[in-house]
Image 1 (cartoon, chains in turn orange, blue):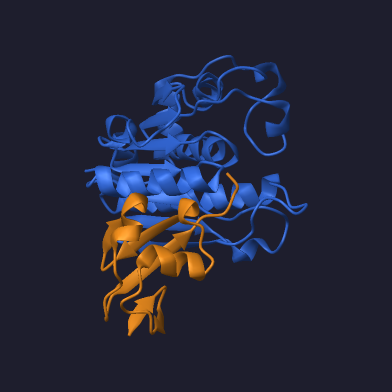
Image 2: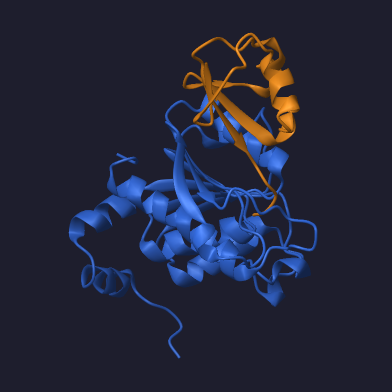
Length: 64
Length: 213
């Protein structure tokens, strides 16, 4: 299982960018950390999610 | 009316209320603020009032009439770059702290040059893509920097929804994380100030924990 924002999901072997889009995240608005390492936006499409990965997706909203 | 105040008078007023150790830590602290809008201008004023010794202020924009509902600026400052207008206000609160400011747009190319020497950076941008860009670049290009970010403070729903969370090892996020600007919800002073207060308070905690030593 993969832990994403604290929730367990069966998404191993998926492409990280494709998964984010499917889950409704806009890649331009997020910061993604995988196993305590930031994955830069332009690398998201190169990452295959592995079993036991811990992923944090921080989604920004407008306002400041 | 008093026109000016000596450094000794200001120090004495601070001495009377806070332990020396706290004053020294705050005086030696340096904090950068990226974005000088509703969050950034309020954070800067709060940190100045709290005795932070040096602030570095970054924004490319000028003061606009639509800013007056939540940002610290005053009518005589309309049209002035925020990077000039904000230090004018801060000097009237504490003329003895150091304020550096630059009127520039932050990009992935200049993040390191601007911010790498700062142990604490407040992300206070407005647009979500710019927020994400800055946080990502700070965390990857500035390995010693702790980031305090604002996310979600529009409207007038319950202010208790605005919280501070540690999201990553060097990232604290303040806000309700959900209320987006749009669909008739705008940014209004109270919740923006609450969120700015969360960011400023986290900065003070980090300074007292030794982040700037």
